[in-house]
Image (cartoon, rainbow, N blue to C red; front, side):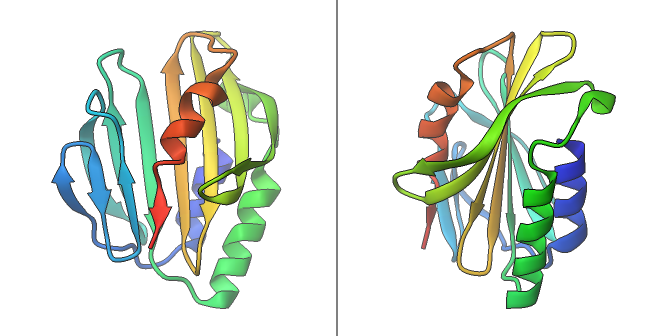
Length: 165
């Protein structure tokens, strides 16, 4: 997961300005993303050419949500290639075991990269989704407490709340 984040930091440029309509909805000129009311914004950060918003719920589960700014066709192609090359790579040195990865179809978004990992300590489960849009890339990392064998059933509906404009 760190490799994927590192590549994402490295290749993306100029993030959109995010506006917060309420504590669990993010809107910009390029997308909308809304979560159920039990998710609250933990913090927002504009850094390394993109914006990140972290959410937390009452169980201390966390979502890290990042969206690039508009990318040139070349930068978009290179970013997508780099992200896809990192999919499924060994993450044991970072304390994670990859359980599964690949492309899944989320009806409202089409093909989305998915990677499911479990902390080597067994106390955290993570699911990362990369959504490719028109010259932009959105990245979601869900980290849930405990070993959650069906994490995708829990988080895919949350990813489907994301909409490109």
